[in-house]
Length: 162
Image 1 (spheres, rainbow, N blue to C red):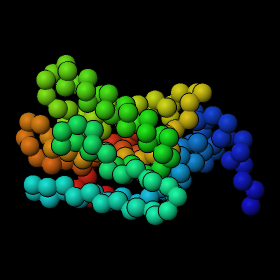
Image 2: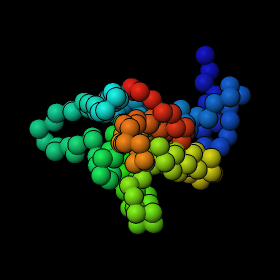
Image 3: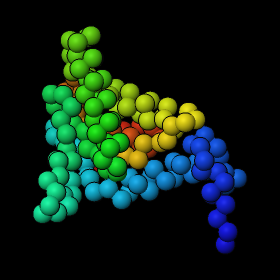
């Protein structure tokens, strides 16, 4: 069968006749090739597990990165995209703490990162991020554990396990 996706993957805003954004499909495929990660929420705790690929020649950084106090980011996908999103998450968290004097909640951080990722998907000249994120932390007002999943498209989903 002939794959005509090539004509529709020149830009991230061009829809194929099948109703798909080819660039977004490529980004999701890149995320799936990354190391696996698992998150689960109980009544009072958050459990994060990550696959560590061993290579004696490369010292790989931890997949679980601290953004702020009791706020963590786990990613899968392209490391350059992950590093950029981690940097943005830390900037957003620091700006929120400086402005409001409290730690940003995982819901709000995930939404802000999702907005950033959605803009990359929607504007011509940019490509979707090849990384998916799990944002884990405790809500500052209720102190309840929260786990948020952020898709390549910028969709944010609250979840109990992912």
